[in-house]
Image (cartoon, rainbow over all chains, first blue to last red; front, side, top):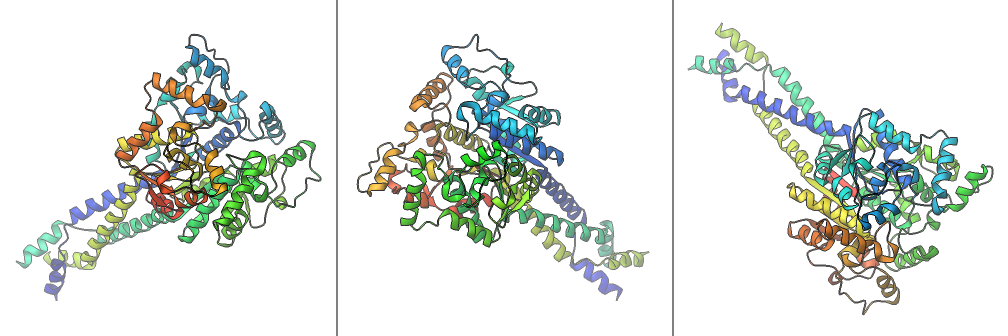
Length: 192
Length: 192
Length: 192
């Protein structure tokens, strides 16, 4: 009987150290995948006031749920992150022209619908205040304070003739590669 | 020889119960991750007729492929889900004004391009009918009947002065948290 | 002592072949999940010049990082993929009208902001040239050459009265199902 037991075991030879290694490796790999559940990466392409509100409400909601958030601001999305005080002095003619036509920071954005020459955003801000919805500037500040990582697309910054000092503090310069790297560690990605 | 076999086994001592437990646990964890493949979560932010068409064609396509679908309707996306019959009676002045300017349900939406004061959507509906493409109202009804979960953003409902009874039946109230929870169980997320 | 060893082993009977099979299966399943990290699927709904630029910069960035990219072009997104030479001869009246009003290929697109009757895109192209940013036509060609898979939404092609020969070469016809299948094998999905 003893022999039978031994036979049974030896018929199924396990290289147990190897098995253990494989299981430990599997656990590490699955943990990496699971970690993505807690990471959200957004492209903030649009510079519309309402879309910016949506992006930062989602970002701050995610932070409140202990998630990590990365925002890649590109094209018009950079309008949201401009200092209200920046001047276009010292830029080329075209850059001056383009910059002069773009809103300067979250206080000057239009809405994607019902903008009516800027009345739309004012109306929304009034209604938001009445209903105690946090204002956009506060949402952005809270996001940065809570560790939301905001990458300012360097190609757009260059293309629009912007300088990093035109943008609010706490941003990180980066390109499509930085966005893609972040996206590949995120379960959820949004293009806003 | 018998001794050698025993030696080989005992040189590689496996706490087999523990191993089994770890493997069973890994299988459960990977199943959770794989389940996400069958789940799609969309933010329906835009109230454009054409984007709504795209959202509900994707939703119904996913349902046909046995996927689970969650739509988080927010901002202008709620226009798509309004009853055509609702009146603005009993709201404040601003709410009345904003509501009066917004389309009332899927039959009144504009297109994101070529709207031409509402001729665009009429043209599309005519062309869609000719080519046997399902109309938006039907797509929404089918989606709800087939179990697509539609969350109406409570913050927007409040902000716009809407009541749940202004919206079609079968919706679920919720906030950014409900969207994020659904997104974290979904492989695919879209912001439309 | 020999007996003890045997006892210990036999107290924890492992069907080792079964265990090995389960571990091997787990490794295959996790590899499938990990492969998704390297796959990006985009819906290209918008026909705006700036959004098309963003989509193809992201696509080519992903290819440079050894990722697989699938673009599902639908609705106005097909404008980006039209040959500049196509004529509307032989279509119905409505189709002719709609096609006549839509831009013909990447050289004729408007921007989502600051279009100014077509001056916007010209301005951008000039600024892009000055800053050595690749032009849209090149970005599309590079994408196709590098193996980006572009699916042209058959429903839109039919709806708009387009023919496959109106679109640039190298596209693949497909529907929402093709998009969803690709999305379910992708870690990142974007609706642009």
